[in-house]
Length: 314
Image (cartoon, rainbow, N blue to C red; front, side, top):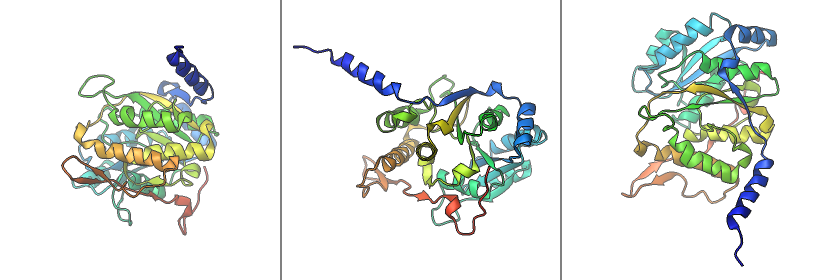
């Protein structure tokens, strides 16, 4: 007897998706700076925009200048913070001249890396709400910040807002986000289906309440974005998440050969949280020629757990 295996699989996934709570979506056009400034003033919250940077001297200054000239005067942004992640160029000096407060990352026992830079940014930021933006974006505009802030200022139940956008690759729409499509999205579907409605789980643009972020570990390296997403949903529930459409994001696309290490870090962050126990061979990506590309392991502890930390609440 021949059965409709495909139909059974389809029915199974329909049942599975029926129990997935969709992460709420917004569009940046829903929020204007004057309206958000009024909502921020009413809430009493302060806002830091944090830019983790490594060798971004060519792009960080226009981003800082935009924030300082457009959003700081409205009262919507209180602080522009750049975290220099062991740059070999003039990133720190350029950012400081543009008006940012600059702090150095990588001074602790963990060394440099995306997770460490974000962790240092949270620890150093003065704001009750921290907006993280990547510093290699060449089409940055105020809507990158207003879009992320809007849901948080509109709904006190939200703890984290992730961006999503179209990511061209070499000018071709939709070609970017290769690690997302080939690693993050499949592993979320298989292991964390409750997060399958998140469009860009690895987006560097996100905003969160300090009171929530300070309770979470920050995975070393490039696994930090997925780690925060999974951990926050686990601790506060999917209802504490939202995502916002920022339109198009154009940045420096890395060659495929440079993405394998990032993909490995993302996969490790997922497997860590899925309860995989044997991690003895997870410290490096083994390449066909016999080389071993180091992969950051472990996580920075929750900021709120640090001795002497002055806990704030949003």
